[in-house]
Length: 96
Image (cartoon, one colour):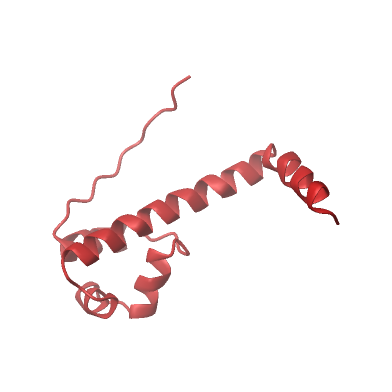
């Protein structure tokens, strides 16, 4: 498959609702992971130290920071407490 064919396939698939939702979910997980990582670094903590504080493994923190997991609300609450940050969960409607 040529590069042009691949690019066209990606563009055509991107219009499918399931594909768009997958990208959106991945984006949210990535952004959440980046926030956790930034807070952890700002607090001078290693992944292993944060994991001990939260009651999980260093590998679990690494996966979360990489955007590879969809954490439960309870896990996010423990992370917020360990990082000294307030967890805020809200719904927001899209601008039409």
